[in-house]
Image (cartoon, rainbow, N blue to C red):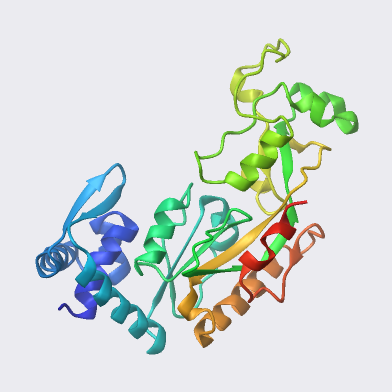
Length: 299
């Protein structure tokens, strides 16, 4: 088997994507990371291969998974540093938060397939994502931290902006909606489609001197509207779905004292971030599996 530092380097490379990032995170040099990665591949009989921006494993991972199980339990139970990551849309809200005993990742996932893989394989210990499109794997527990409405956003030069408070969903339908990563947000996507909103150009699109990128209708929440910057307005068209920030962990740690402390820290932080935003509801009773309440999130 391998020691804690060796497996940590192997998993940090897969998590943080580069040897430089892994070395910085582990406070060592890249040569050390490279040596540990090579040893881990030899011991566990697997091979790391780069596909697009991510590292993937080839080979039988049975022994590796067993070792990761032991190492993760050691991290949780003996106050070793745990690993947390987040979706790109939540980065602005949480990147400034430093939690004792927790290490942040890149916080830039646009989809959830990869972070769910990292959770399932015990490479990371927690993940912040968006509900209601959270993982439904029974081996994972989802804890909702807050709930809020969804907004449609356009540039102030957009033809819809000129309609002011009279703009309706019927007015929005001819315009392309900001595309979502394929298959990553099926619940939210289904709501958009049920309203006749989609990311493709419509034959009914009114003639405009503006380039097509200036005619796209964006999607935001009270906590993400700031990502659009100045020169944007929220349309008076309410989407019939609530969204929210959610924390996902392996179910075996759902009652762990360190998780309860993490949830308290996250709730305290989001209260601060959402101060003055009455549309954001902080869910103090969030330490319950979200899956049981799933249907109630969609109006």
